[in-house]
Length: 294
Image (cartoon, rainbow, N blue to C red; front, side, top):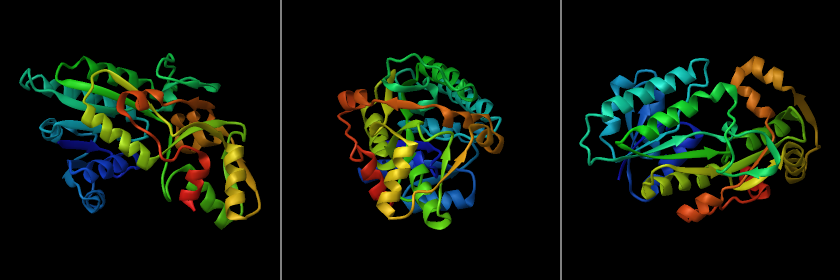
């Protein structure tokens, strides 16, 4: 299959590219700069120069593929408008496609579209209650689902981590360099986690499945608290367990309103991915992820 990817240099998009190329799919990824293009080509994919903010320049090429994976966001104040402009451009151009032509679209949501749920694990049956900074995602999803040219799958990942990338590896590096780890909000906050290689495998399966209206949570295990993670990192590295607490308000001031999500304590299940696509997480507990970061 021929797959087009946005966000190909990010943790999610690059994981999807790797998983797709491993089984000999052909991948083209959007690149905003020569540096991004080099990273994409180093993975083995083809880079197409273009900007998420100017979809008119690349939408026709994207629609010539069998599947589109959307894994990009600007994380700037205009990210909702940018996403909706892109979705509108794709859906409008898709109207000119032959009626029998269907494109598998994989849209990346996230756990912050769900409400806080530190005790009862979130499933796909829970009513969405998105962080205000991400409410626009619901409109984008609705538009894509309504487009007759698309078969839509929505994937809601938990916190994505990978070897040398993501929150847990960052905490480990902080402890080694600064002798302390940054905790956002409180040690009692729970996050669902998924390793990037497991997430990439899920995207690959979703592309090949080609379902319509499929909603999938993506977590390797239900959750781990920040306090538990800090203790396990200290034990794994043999370094003193020192913490620096950063408030949610401080995160918002530094990164923008979307950072309020770090205050949402959540647990999440991914049973539907297992049942629908035969997916299984290899990194199914926090200890395996910490060992990988080592």
